[in-house]
Amino acid sequence: MLVTLLTTLHLTVFAQNKSSVLAITGARIYTTPYQEPIEKGIVIVENGIIKAVGPWGKIKIPKKAKILKADGLSLVAGFWNCHVHLMEEKWNNAAGQSKEELEKKMEEMFLRYGFTTIIDLATLHKENLLDLAQRVTKENLRSPEILYAGEPFVAENGSPLYIAPLRLREVKNKRDVELHINEQVKAGASLIKIWSASPAKKGIVSLSDSLIAHASLIAGKYGLAVAAHPTNIRGADLAISNGVKILVHTSPDDRLPFPDSLVEKMIKKQVVLMPTLQMIKWELERFNVPSKNDPLLQTGITQLSQFFKAGGTIVFGTDVGYMTVYDPADEYVFMQQAGMDYKAILASLTIAPAQVFGKQKETGTIEAGKKAQLLLLKEDPAKSISAFTNIAYTIQNGEIIFRKQ
Ligand SMILES: [Zn+2]
Image 1 (spheres, rainbow, N blue to C red):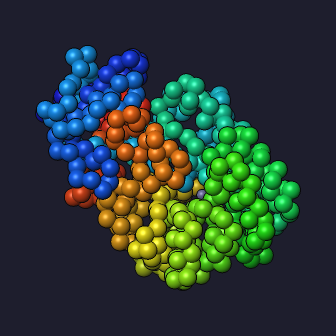
Image 2 (cartoon, rainbow, N blue to C red; image 1 turned 90 degrees about the horizontal axis):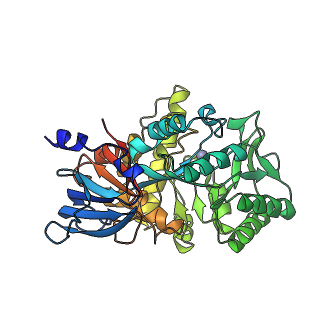
């Protein structure tokens, strides 16, 4: 019954008519992760902005509204994947691909998993990434909103082994750091990405304290955070001690939990963590190492658990695009194993990244005045975290940009 009602709505109804009003009716609405949901709620969206949210009977549905019946579904804010890379071959020549091709690729990688905002955390082809981001905005493509870090940098001879023979930008002195950051800012970067320590040809190569501190200083002048790939505990400590605000992975290479003093430092300095645990599983398995109970993966889970229990801010990220698995289901499972309940996971997908990246006035919760970046889930996340990958509709600025067939 539900299916037939829903299929009467065509995907492009809202896309074509900017002034149309959308009423989503009957869903269980999680306005924020930590509040009790509104059962049988109504959300009114006008020109892409949420106008009203409330229970059935309390919210007036405008006569001209298109109705999206969502009985039995759960409505949450659109998800963020804060660690992606748009660098697989299929993104090449972004300027020359058809709109449809790009939209299909966005759908298979992001929209069907509910991601309405993504952060490209390092590119080797900045011009192409800019072409893509520009087309998404200018042509209003069915796509997540794209934020990016631009090109990352590492220490001299610090280009990571796993991208060889390619090399990243290697900085020698403060002037290099400054020029590099200025260049990323000019390209529209929302954050700056570095490897505080990287697994290079001759072992682990770290940036110096002074270069990391200088990066934090320069980025800070532009109001941007520095995000670091830490590799190991020393790399994490080095980053945090020198003003880095975001760790883009756990740092499991030593197979040791975070020292308590490091966790304390992270909390004190309000450092944010992106777990990307699924990527560890993928790395192990592609080298035919069984991931179950593997110490590397277990260390990642343990570190996330320590950080979570200490009250740290976690933002969702999977490293998809480097990792070739698009389905993020395993990431949710590992987050749960680390002790995060559905509310904490939902926060990492919505309100936490919105706050970390300064978008909390626009998105991250379901409130009047915010952009209608919304998801209808087929299951209730309170019952099972499988709900997070069971997406019925992805809505971007009031337009349905994905629906499950
Ligand atoms: Zn990455």
